[in-house]
Length: 491
Image (tube, rainbow, N blue to C red; front, side, top):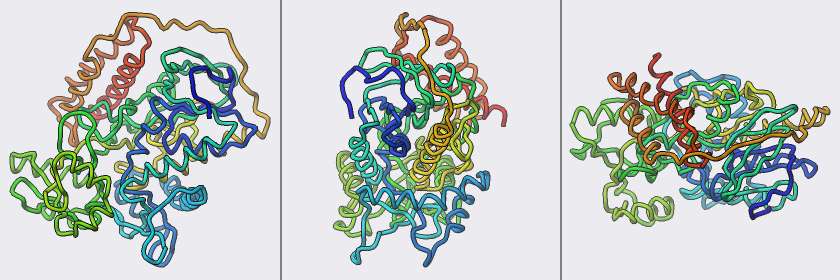
């Protein structure tokens, strides 16, 4: 794995944009004869994957579970808007990918008998979720980075931002900002694994990478974007200030935490028979409705009835994270409220992760495989990242093995100069989105919000701004926000 500013080559077989689970697992599918450039927007560990707490869902035993039951739970959570074939592919192929991670040294918690310790989360009818404490994503990222570093054919660059992707004969030209310097390369194939759009909201569990860049780039190329308004708002983020919020994993409720309103009363029985273990969208909407009923945004998780030693062992990151805010979860209530968490919509892809643009693929959160429907079942996202990044790589390998032509270098001229982006543009977009569509759309604000976002987008496109990360991220945010509010406005 190379560091520094300069890229080794000008022409690559495959460009993979994003260093989460999808990006790294996809890169690892290629053999030593395939030149792969893997880009990480910031540090290689800054991704939604790295923040994933709860785990990864997979049917590894058929004693009390089945592929069919996993699929049915996925359909129920997704309100049966899911793509049946995509879900079947996920649940049947996913266990193989999970076992491969284990072979590569990724750790999952085991019980006293040395068997994988499976936990339960909202929407699941069986214990089928593998986890590593409450830092499953970080452990998967650690293990995948270790594998990527062993591969001589993978050039892994951090602090590398894909500014633009342009179609050329038999591939793409990619304009990249690497540690402050602009470079352009050519690739025969590209897999976008750029994550979600969380930073279009004031309150999100997503890291700073989640600005919808891959969606904007695919949209500029003419790729179809599907159901971008299908946004999951996690019901239990730690209630604090604006920006990135600390997630209280669904597995806390899976292990017995109660959800309380401002009067310290359980209330989920008024909304769903599954109580605290209803799917995320149901719980989030129930909290909003309960807040309207009580006139308060004060909600809490209560897991004080569990032993302190158990909580420290099972949820070490959450325990430590809450302590930083002065909350001891073994003695205190945990203040929570919904915030943006995950994107079910995205760049439309088929079962091989192909977009509607030739040689362009998408995997992970930026894609729409159809797996999640209108609401993602807990812990299906990491599984989807594995399955569909692998399928993207396998499809590319088939093309290469069948002698598909490779990209060649082309002449080009790119001007990155221009005026600085006006301060506060991204914050303005977030404020509009928060007012217009948070958990439940605000009918009185949608049309006005859409007009405001479209004005921002026109200004960003018409004026000559310098092609900085700040400008391009604002362009990505405005593009995603415009698509989302347009969809909601048509409902």
